[in-house]
Length: 453
Image (cartoon, rainbow, N blue to C red):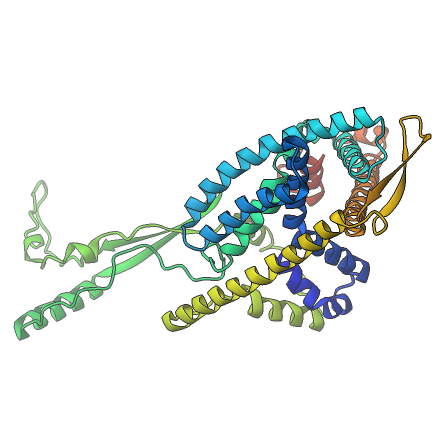
């Protein structure tokens, strides 16, 4: 959500610099952000409606029962650890899962009793189910995952209510960040050594000079599998003295080894191997292009300026300053409190407005004729509050845009796949030699075909 807010904050600049970002896309992100912000209150209203039907109580009492559990969870989340928050959220998710299952059954029973599906909630659920089924059919390899759509319906309160509370309360937790420099694991601060005498200092100095003059460092680099391992090895090389010619079959015993001063084990000890990120493909490409004359190109000035600005603003590691980190932690906590208050204040206002309109007179609500299963007018009318209808319509509009974008993407993928198959004719393929040359660098088209089809 913070990334979307940052994106919308610089929407005009991004649209001017990036041709892939359009103003309709920014409008879509705005609708998506609004629905995400107001989703907790909408879930609470849905739970209140379920309580009204299941427990046969008044809407006021149902709303109070629906607000109490998330309000308690929100209050205690400021005082307990995140692990405890997750455990409490798991218990509430189980309870809400059973409640959603019962609500779905009650909704189906209500549609059968009233013999109509022409209600906003029923139409939205049916349309959403159809969208999911069509999307699954158009993705044959992942068609089995549509079964988890039932789990998605059961976890709606957990995803749009409890997860929102957990995310807002833990906004100041940046342990998941990628810009902080992580110190390598090791011992703590070194303990001050006792002062050395003059004789010890002279002995250490001579030992250091002797070691440096007789040591060399050998570095071995290898690229194996997924990693590049750089191993440093220390080897002691001793200079041999010149001896005169010895008669044959004479054993010469070298007695110089005991005279060599013993070096501390920490100096001769082999340091551990350093594991570097995966750069095998870079090494392979460099080795293949050593005998090739490649032209050196340059990025456009605007593009280079964009990436340098992006790197300095978002990707460079933050300096390790304890005072700044403490000040930043306090600022993050204050920001957490302000954003949490604003977020749930918006939800409270939306909750009160929607609930007030539900209790108001029928003249304020939208009058919709009631149709039966044969699409014939029954002579009765349904009354829908304007805010609830607007929210459902906006959310349905966002889902429709996502579905149309998915259709466009699948058609483009089909065109790409057909173009790949028709690149060469069958006769030309039969005339190709069967011997294949194994290369180190894989073709991008081959990679794309075998990983996405």
